[in-house]
Length: 336
Image (cartoon, rainbow, N blue to C red):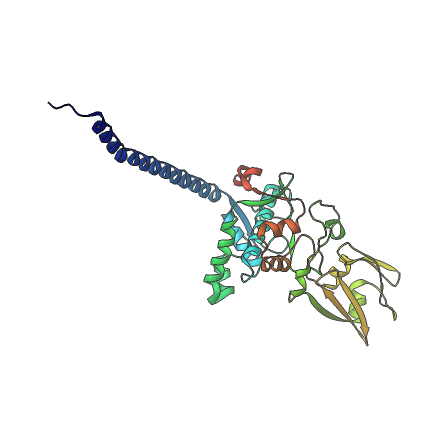
């Protein structure tokens, strides 16, 4: 037998390796991809299972019955009810975080709330958060139901499980429609000081259709609602808040807070001025709502300027963090 030359043997080995090594690398890459896909699938399955295990018990004010549903489905119903679906996607995402945080906080503490019927975590009115189910939204939206529900659902899904926290606890995620250009310190409207609910500028609200409003009352109605008698001078504003709203006012020797005036006269905000015209009093207001926390029209204005939802919530809730519900004890939530 003729002996093979070393050069020929070396060439043959190189040729064999040129086929074998790529095959090994391709198989390794495929195995890695399959492993990553499997891991991702497991994460998604675990997330779905975790979310579906969280239930919210909503007391329906119209039927006087309790409706139980998954957390994320409840959040969709709140966002759809509390914010216009034609708002920017990033504003809807910010609203989803506020709504989810509110319910998580409420569910974890609902045992201490005697105003909620037994067996429920929350009520479906403005006293907590407005909630409507699919059937109610179909009736409300009519032919626009499909695209509106899809858009709101996408906003909620994109922020799934995310809540707002301060010192690793869910915040009081208050929100309202429209500011007068500034939000309020919590202590200027409510009694308690809350570190993340501070007055901030909100210039986008001037574009809101709810920014300006007027209300006309007869003098007798005005006096009856406030329990006062007025002369030529209706009253004097004696103090303003950090948010440029009325803090205190004196009417013919009687002192009121701006909130008292707003509630007794059913005004849209505590930024008001008034003038006497004949036998009537014309009251002009700026903004709509209590003014504490996130302005919805302000959030939409920020989104229109290209701000992301995390930037929006960080502006209106000072010093907060975005956390996942499982980081603050979702097992407690699921067991309620």
